[in-house]
Image (cartoon, rainbow, N blue to C red; front, side, top):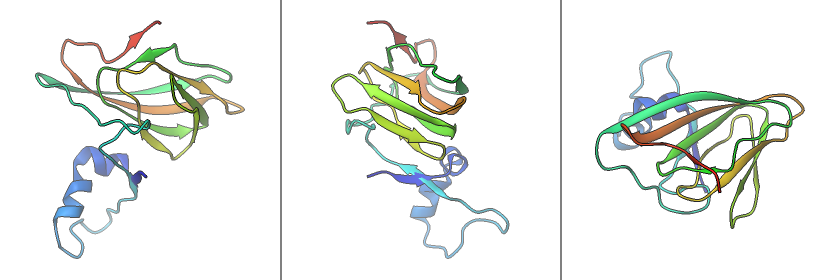
Length: 143
């Protein structure tokens, strides 16, 4: 089961710091965190594997229009997804489809083809963070 952490706390590394420090309140006044995601596994229960050389992080906000979908694709790198608005259904080859709503976060499968479908009544918006390697693709499309 995944634990939720804020994207900000995760990206700033505060999620790990909160677990390591035994201080009562290690955060400055006026700054709070909401747990969003902490996991070593993808949404299909497979271990996350990191690229070895020349690390590069890429973040995008993607919008799936009403009834839209992504192409059938796979990722050779870890990919973090946070649903900002709407609802999507993620279909991974060999796995049960799963729906994610605004506020949900997950790690996409690596090296397994999958596709996201917008199942909301309007657009769905996603924050997508790729933990990749400079000069190498984060996404491979096609059959």
